[in-house]
Amino acid sequence: MKAIVCKEYGPLEDLVIEDVPAPEPRKGQIAIKVEAAGVNYPDGLLVQGLYQMKPPTPFTPGMEVAGTVAAVGEGVSGFAVGDRVAGKGGLGGYAELIAMPANQCFVMPDGMDPADACALMVAYGTSHHALKQRADLKAGETLVVFGASGATGIAAVQIGKIMGARVIGVASTEEKRTLAQEAGADEVIGYDNLKDDVKRLTKGKGADVCYDVVGGDAFHAASRFMGRNGRLLVIGFAGGEIPKLPVNLTLVKEYSVVGVFWGNFTMHEPDVYAANMEELFGWYAAGKVKPLIEGRYPLEDAAAVLARVLGRGATGKIVLTP
Image 1 (cartoon, rainbow, N blue to C red):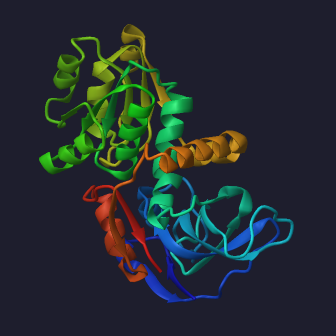
Image 2 (image 1 turned 135 degrees about the vertical axis):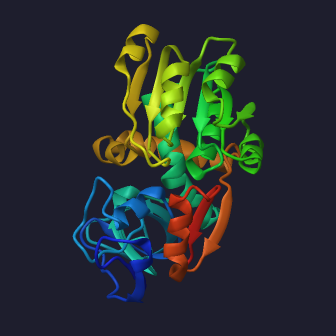
């Protein structure tokens, strides 16, 4: 089968596509014929050796897929060959076939686009966990979403609205702000006057929750516009800088800084994770959430697509289609 292979940590352009042995599902696993593999920011970091996890090389990146069950391993129940499923693993998604733990997979609702299913796994899964479990977002609160035109940002905007929040989307260009508004943001702003704009839009109160996938200067602004009892969610550092927190601000302004590591959550709280995914799939079936799929690309375009995602040039969700 064809797969993208990272032979050594290094530049994205060093990725190669080659024939590798097809995986056989081990005990507790299913094999999935991949129809769509989601492209995520951490995939690019992992290939460069910049992610928290550093698997031995060579490896195939890709943590989420959607497709058809090709084989069922020993001890697996609830899945049969031919079922259409979406699943999350650590590696192996950028390939024609993947074996992954059955307890990390879910049967797709009838008619679900496999690209949409990929978006619901990591992008919507991260945003849902961040706002529901980590922020405990309440109806009537003000949610500020950084990167509001990206896959996770659009998810945060839509989920924030479902949960009853007033949503302020933040994006770097007019085109991206339009996408955030179309996703449901009540107001959209840029990064240039971030602190003052949030203060103005909240009549000086500040944000109840800030969803930060950017870091850097955006985080510094958030540390100054958070409201009392606010929750500043640390999700990622797409801006490239891991900022330092002036902790005196958390003291005088009485807000919390909350880390969000969705992959860790899925491993430590599998039952809650499963309930979250059931809710997300239900929202999708009801038309309450709808991922923006920016593009579908062949496996051989993996390096170029990852470069766009890491360069913050992508909007919505991108998938590879083996």
